[in-house]
Image 1 (cartoon, rainbow, N blue to C red):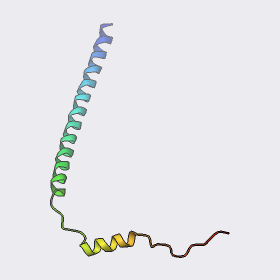
Image 2: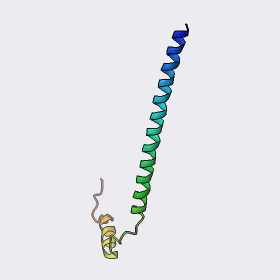
Image 3: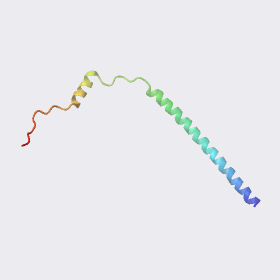
Image 4: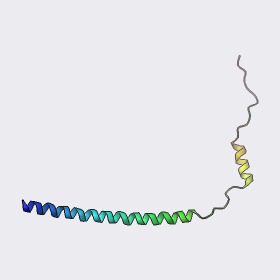
Length: 76
C-alpha cells in the first residue's frame, strides 16, 4: 500500500510540475501578446490623412441616391 501511495504522490508531483510550467508558458505568451497589442494600438493611434475630399464625398453621396421614377405603368 505504501509503495502504491508513493507512486501516486510522485505521479501527482510530476503533474503539478507540468501544469506549473504550462501556466508559466501561457503567462509568457499572454505578456508577449499584450505588448504586441499595445504596440499595434499605439501605431494605429497616429492621425490619418483625410482620405476623401469634399467633392469626392458629395459625388459618392449623389451616386448613392436613387433617381426618381418619371414613368410608371398604370394598372387597368
